[in-house]
Length: 193
Length: 213
Image (tube, rainbow over all chains, first blue to last red; front, top):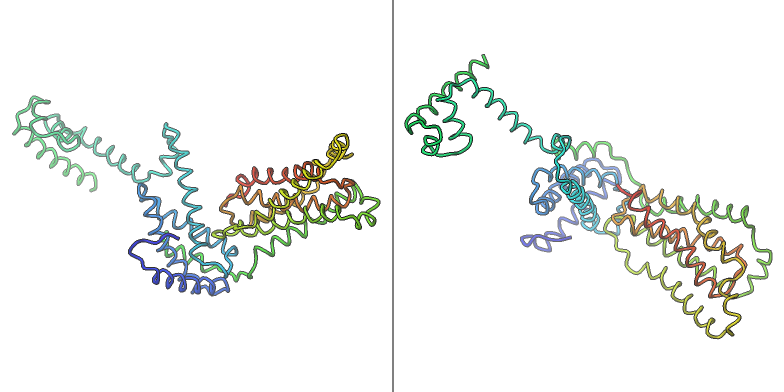
């Protein structure tokens, strides 16, 4: 098992000893010790996996639970003459490689499929819902309010660029944003009521 | 679900696990597979008629020992590969060394023999069927071994499948040795090795498909 540089060998062996005795009691049927053991294992797994799943922070917690489930289902494969870290590490590594392999297979298909988006990108779906709502609201505004908000607030252009683009004066753009947002807020409140 | 709650949920339904479960399941697999293999041998081929007499020939025992050695190494390897984080260490030597020794013995005999006696020694009378027979007899053992492995956690499924194949092939060859009339080292070095290699190959190919967990 790899250690972080901040963890001294003696601390690692303390953890090993504590977790191992909890796990062995769990194997004998002690549910409380077993729960403690799994919860502590989860913490170590989270740190271990987060470091290796650097690009996918969303996946870490799912994988932690996947590993816990695997350890639970395969607990009969642990034998007491073996360090618990070696056993747990091998399982975590196996599940990590499984995930990475599935990911690379998925990402090799360049065309994103809608089903996969729905499964793995929940936060992205919410964001696009919000965008759709904003656009529906914006469509109700007159151009002199709508265009400044679209260009400055949504597309991130500067006030001067927006003025050039729309042919409005800079102060008209600023006023348009201000009044437009106010009108939008009023519409939102009206929609709630 | 929060991970701590998930852990509590798993722990709530925990049942005591008897120690040495892996070994016990493997022994059960052997106990199911070996009689089947013996049954195929007895019904399909029958014991060799001069079995009692053959027991006095060293080559008979070398053949038996050769097969049992590979089977035992396969058993030890399966037991290690079935458990996450356990190194195989030198167990593979137990399967490779007998083959190397048999090849050395075969080459030695090959060189001592006069040229026209070599081919009959190598081909025997049953070279056509030997490989297939060993593979067939080891089939129930391979199935039982893979089935047992499915209830375990091999992190290297191809290697675990191959080890199950070595267990099945070695044990199958040992069972077949009670029927097989061939007793020359060149014959064993080629046809027995191929017969054992077949289940090993099958296990290595099936492992990644069957042993996911």
